[in-house]
Length: 216
Image (cartoon, rainbow, N blue to C red; front, top):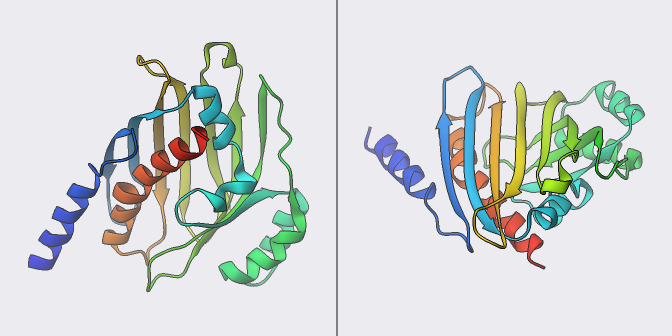
């Protein structure tokens, strides 16, 4: 009982970790065996257009996004290879997926989509998570510096993932207002404390990482 209380207290503190210039508030609704809802809103330093340019750099996520081991656009042929591989091991599937890595088919100022393969470093003793997402980008409101990216699960060793990022100008000059929402079920073998850690620690770190690269 004491251990559970300590973990809850620590996770509560993590939601208010100081970032570079960011102010992020995270809520996490958790129900065992069901997709949990993660919702975060925060302001970061950087123009919305610059933040968006970094947010869609999927093939470079491993260099700046927390816990990302690998991430890249993948062809439909590559997805078929993964689904017929006869293994669900993240490392082996990563090797099989690499030859099908491509650049995103971006339509600047319009609607565009693609498939992304991603491997996530997951705390011991849980095996690393991998998944293929269909990602849909909306740049039709670029004139007002507002952008949206949504995703849904195609395959993976998680049970559910569906969410969106939105980027828009903040009321303060030179800042962006970001909204993040995700319905995710990382699987039955994921302990509750790891699921909550992903929401309360990793999500704020994503805001921080976007701020760092957007300011470069």
